[in-house]
Amino acid sequence: MDTRVSWSPEALDDVDSIAAYIAKDSPFYASAVVQKILDTAQSLGEFPNIGPIVPEIGEPEFRERFVYSYRLIYRVTAEQVLVVSVIHGRRLPDPILNRLVE
Image (cartoon, rainbow, N blue to C red):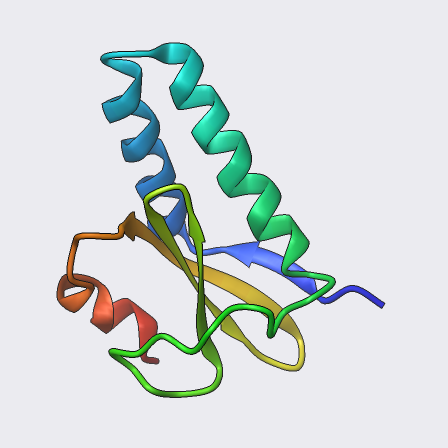
């Protein structure tokens, strides 16, 4: 049975920002990147613990998957997989750590 996958409003904003940034140069590539991010997130419902633990947090419920050069950071609970952030892989997650910890 698949675990429900949900998105935080901030993570959705992250994806919108990524799409807008990439679309400046290539609307086609922006669409492809967003679709891959969405597909990867959806697959977490079937395999929620597939990604490694986020090293900056070190807690087993916080995991990440890389999609191209982006880090899809999510939290696994018994009820759901919550996508909490999508950031560029070179960016340090310090500014988003507050939204990862409840």
